[in-house]
Amino acid sequence: MQPLYVVNNYGQFNHLIARALRDLGIPGMLISNETSPQDVARNCRGIILGGGPAMERSGQSARYLDLGLPVLGICLGIQVIALARGGTVRPGKAGGYGLVEVQIDEHNEILAGYPEHIRVWASHADEVEHPPKGYTVLAHSTISSVEAIAQERDHIYGVQWHPEVSHTENGRLVFENFSRICQS
Image 1 (cartoon, rainbow, N blue to C red):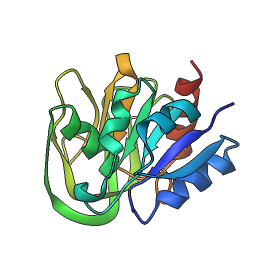
Image 2: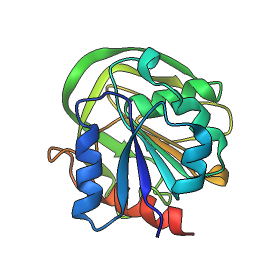
Image 3: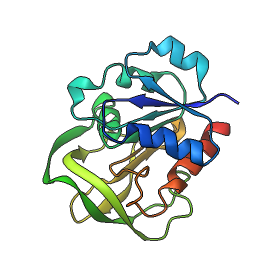
Image 4: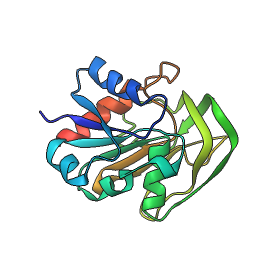
């Protein structure tokens, strides 16, 4: 089975995404965000856009959205998705990392198995202000009206929070659900 590629956007938790996949028995590999889109398309079954400090350091990440592979964006990854597809991103009002209570509005395939409310570890230094046209908002919080998005037809998903850290309740579900999506 081909691995999931975890795109390293220089975030402090990207190595934890690869570790979380390994711990779940899901083949995964951390790759540079400068890897050519052709190499990505040939060698994986799905892409996880990891977090990072700034959009300017996201390399080829936006180009990976056009490969026809399922994509999960985490933190900066959701922002890459939003901007590449015509949405908007703004500086967050809450700023740095911390616990956030998220309300799940739609339990689609990426959020299957979650209760109505979850506590997550998230950064809101920047956040999606308006999702792209054709994307559904799946979750919100008192900090942000857009905590998770989906474009199910193309299997593109994004979460503002970090499912890979232990502070996020049931973070593994996002990875298990994404792996299942990538097998269909």
